[in-house]
Figure 1 (cartoon, helix red, strand yellow):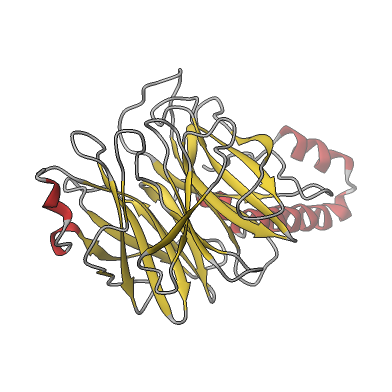
Figure 2: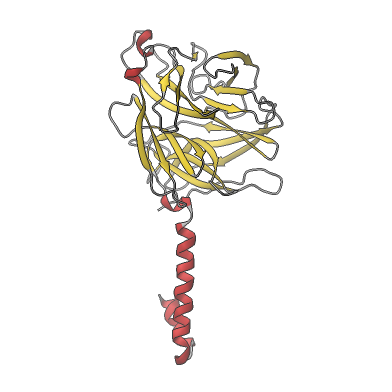
Length: 332
């Protein structure tokens, strides 16, 4: 406030009203800028591994939903306001009690993790992880719905099952805009191995595996997006409960690589730790790219952290060569 009074002292008496008006107008403009920024709402909701999708003017988020003790159900969240501050919960969009093959492995304990959603031909395909990896292998399933808010009905069988050398988690399904082919990227954590498959036209079964290189510093949570003729393969690195968790990326001229490693773009700061397992979207009616991700709030040290991770959204900027600039985490 001292700056304000200093300003008033330098304005002639008959100009004070004008000065106050200008100051208030400036403050209103700054507030408007803040109000239209998705970052001003962070964190948005408790959860992890958020997959973002835009349908018309609506932004959808499908997270690993951690705000309930059951941990075996998925929910969807939608927002239509420009600031992405008002989120409506839908669901459950898929409940493991409705998936007949979940307990075929003989285990009682399972977890609903890291979904990915694809819209094609008026249908919505919901790919999801069934953990944990031990004592039996993790699996990836797929369900189908008529609306982005579900409900999604399971296909009746696992799409992909892991083994002792490969953890079948963190599906990412991507339709190549050039070839029209749809690919499943999956894997990570135990062994930190990336695998890739082409899906059959029904999107419910695998056609064949596609040889793909695991990029540097890959741990899990892969995401693929396409911009201006370039493919961006991004993923999480580090331990999910620690400050080392971060987002790295590589680029390529095709969805199968070879990859050019570009480095880390989202890392811990002083109190927001372990950002990762993300997705990229374009804001409705805008050229602005956004990253949807989770992080630990109000933490210090390197971890391990306890409690609930939080879903956040921040803007993404590209330099003149199309590379992603380091992302700054924002929020209250």
